[in-house]
Length: 159
Image (cartoon, rainbow, N blue to C red):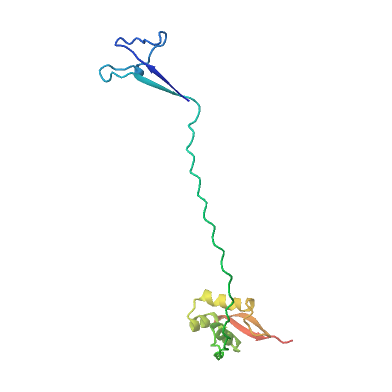
């Protein structure tokens, strides 16, 4: 609810409507600027009602779908399988072949053969047993040689 009170003052600043109320300076009408009375709006604690959203229109019902008709599929023709090419040896296979030799392979020899850095050769050799890439019946041997450095070998296990 909104209460509107009109306050009018004459040229000397007296209030005709109320005798014991003094009008603050910002509410007084300045005769030089305006001749209209100053209106004070008192808004109560009640909030304004919000505008309601228009109701959504209902969508028309969809027509039922037609029943599906089973189509006959043509018989599948068996394609001839492509001949498998023999697998090319991988770097792991080449590494295992180097390590199977009687003299084994040093860290620097492996790095030179594959173009690897020393830490890569150590990682490749150490993961052979973990990834089960070694042939059965062999174990990895590592020895320190004064001339060649660290030498790795695959040694046949005797049962």
